[in-house]
Length: 141
Image 1 (cartoon, rainbow, N blue to C red):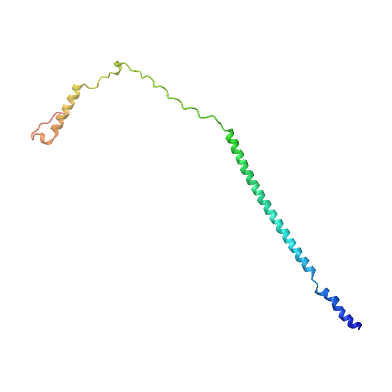
Image 2 (image 1 turned 180 degrees about the vertical axis):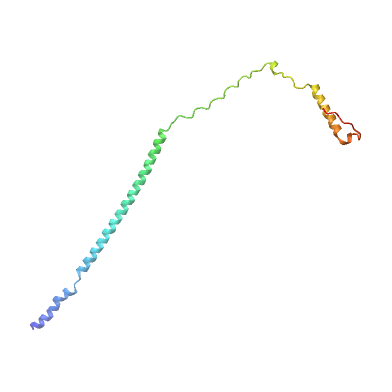
């Protein structure tokens, strides 16, 4: 009976040991999950820090630009343009003496009329219907 008892009791003791969960696999999986979570958290923090740094630099640039513009506006010359100069008064026109203004003509009226009459006569005489067929030579002027 002791052998039979031994064979009946042995499976009862071995059953929990053989059917128990394998903690080694569970520990390895949890460790890998913890590593992945740690890596993702580190990546998120790094990205968030970079974005925060870029936003801070952008805001600082805008603030610096506005300060520079304000300083430039405050330091600019506030004096207005000088007024437009007035026109000077018209100068008094000096009249010259009458004796200086009189100029003698180069040709007198009589000589101009004579020249015009001679030209008209020459013009009439050079036309073909006014010349007679038997004409004499005219003297040259």
